[in-house]
Image 1 (spheres, rainbow, N blue to C red):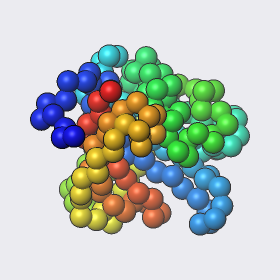
Image 2: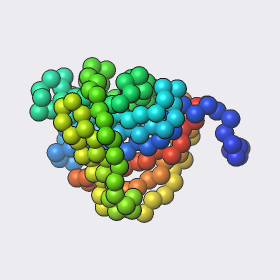
Image 3: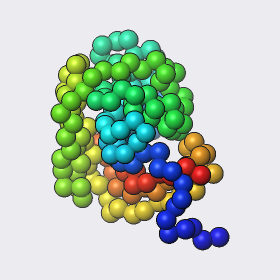
Image 4: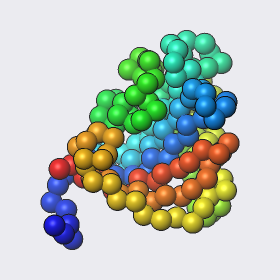
Amino acid sequence: MSRPVINPGPVDWSGENPGMYLKETADGPFVTLISFFRVVLSPHGKGHAAFLLLDPQGNGKDARKPNVCITDNEPLAAYLRDNFVAHFGAFKTASNLKGCRFEPGWDFMASGDGRTVHTEWFRSAIGQVSLTWDQLGAPFIVEMPKDKSATGNYTITYKWEGGGLLGGKSLRLTGMTRG
């Protein structure tokens, strides 16, 4: 069955969603989980949400290893956490995603050439943050049918951008439709 040129399903959100999933050793647990969203269209408007779980298996109460979401749109951040981030592979095992506290953020800026390096930079009540993906490979498109997506509810199109800080990988979301 061929796909329609224009998908009739509603768009739940559109924008970018690079991430970083870091381990200290290849066979060890994740020690940091980051999912950054730059949303240009959603039921909750535009905005940014940076889920920074620096203690993914703990409570994130240690100021040196917080579990926070820095955002300029808290209703959007809650929507993304509950309907998307909670279904992402590594985040499924994070013990306290639901308890991740929201902190106000501002001055969200992107930089880099998009071919070799990309940086997201922003300020927050707990300090400034800089997330960098480098050594980006040649991009290619991944189309994932809804039965293979993290939530099982969405058809997703990604632009794979390869490499990342400390060997992480980056997927830049280019489209998501329900149904």
